[in-house]
Image 1 (cartoon, rainbow, N blue to C red):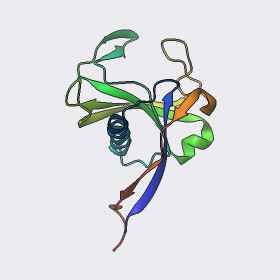
Image 2: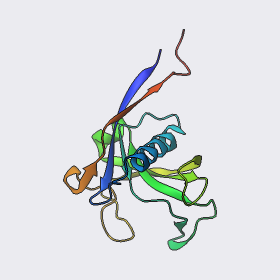
Image 3: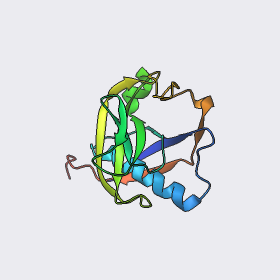
Length: 144
């Protein structure tokens, strides 16, 4: 039996893609990146476009794992606590949203600061929400 997981997708203000196909592909990559850990996210913040840099030991440099999109996600418990997990969804190339692998950081408070000084996950009033999309799952551990 499949389960439907409804997820809210957010972007920073004025960063919501206008192209519907690109938006759909970005949302799919975001969900696949979070699901790579077998999680059921309830909210995902799409923080970037495809880029190939990251912060290593506090210094901005080329990411040795390649081009990726930066996301943050929350499951039901994190929604209640005001925390999130940041992750990178690595892609096949700079113009591709084909999923290759993911990396996930530890849980942080939504009020954590970005290198630019802003809050990583601001209030909903400071975000734009994409159309809600549901994905079905076939649980691996459910009895038949």
